[in-house]
View 1: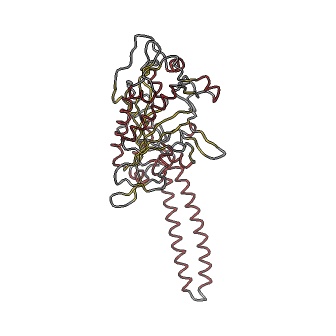
View 2: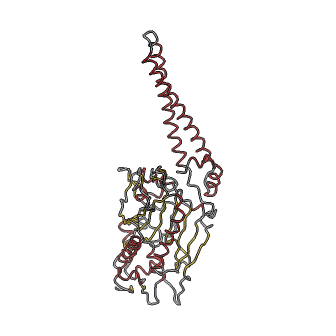
View 3: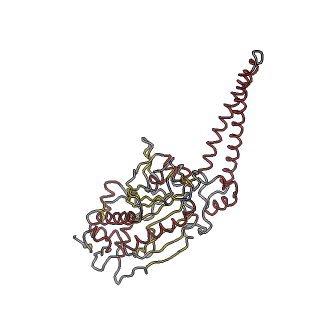
Length: 420
């Protein structure tokens, strides 16, 4: 949730942010109104409670003749207090709903626009070219015995798959390499729950406009996570974290689940857009003034991992209309896919400032010992989708695929060949 004090002081900035996102700026005004109503309700209830307490003291000092009238007045006042408290509770609920409807305030430097209005910040490596007709990752994966889409669909339905043989080892190697790199950079390794309570899913901003993406187990009222960002963000919910020695960094290894609602017809072939995949995700708690610098560090760690798999990629500054509700700025790293002759997202890192931590009540103590809302950031370090970029960019004319040097110790071979 955004800072209400910022909204009161800078309402036009919040309205402009809503417009830049393609969202309704009137939601900012609705939040302002709900905030004003709630503050008035609190003041009214506080004043009536104070009067009621004062009246109680009067009754204690009153004479026998005065007491009956004062008791009657106290009874009337008690009714008014209960009515005021009910009005305050209603105002609290309305404020909470209005507060959750407003997305985080985008950074001024973020490009304004929709999905195609990103800005390319850098390109690393030239797009891979071959002197033969390149295959796509599905054809390569099936011919090399790495991916079984047909049996995945038979067992679980569309957009499910088996990783088999060296395909499974390739994924495990990717994730293990990512985990090792993160731990070497000071992250604490975590294997989190993949089922979370509704308040934790809502706290990270995934039950708003992204709710249709999430699998819900109605009988248990639990949600399957689409990223370990959710349980990692919730790890310190309702706590004061110690940031005296710098950011608190976690890296989560988990399976992730997404319904892919509204994406029918997009990337239905292969393992680019699927319902289940594995991911290593970085997550950071830090102070708000350190968040921008930490965002750049997360991007640098992602770039280091991409260098290890030896694929061409570019970094883009994602436009405001394509940001999640929690993010104020997001950088994507997109790898070149020869079969599509296009760049496709492999990693993403978002700066969520205090938006998630405010919802989850994650705080830290400033230099004066006062509790303040922490900032949160996240960044992807490896996923199942990376296999696509590896297979397509390292394929050879004979149908084999070269294994990137950094992954050879995990996979156990430097070349994947048909029949292996």
